Image 1 (tube, rainbow, N blue to C red):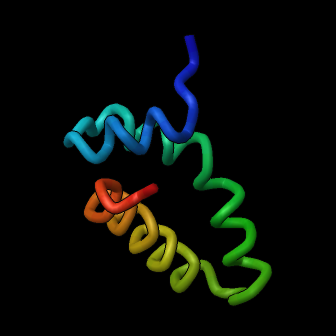
Image 2: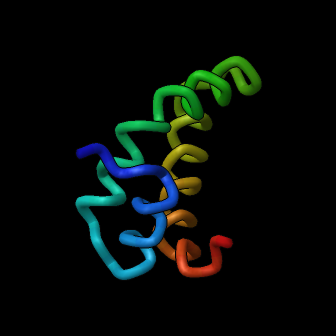
Length: 64
């Protein structure tokens, strides 16, 4: 059964790297596409995308 985003965030907050991978797979394409439309620069979009998911990993426990 597929986990909800909320369930994935809870698992990420407990250090589950598989949950982060699933969350990344689910959302990275949309975020990257948005970044490319805004920035029009592949390197910057990739850097920011990485920063976004590093913050998800670090801050998942603060999600409400």
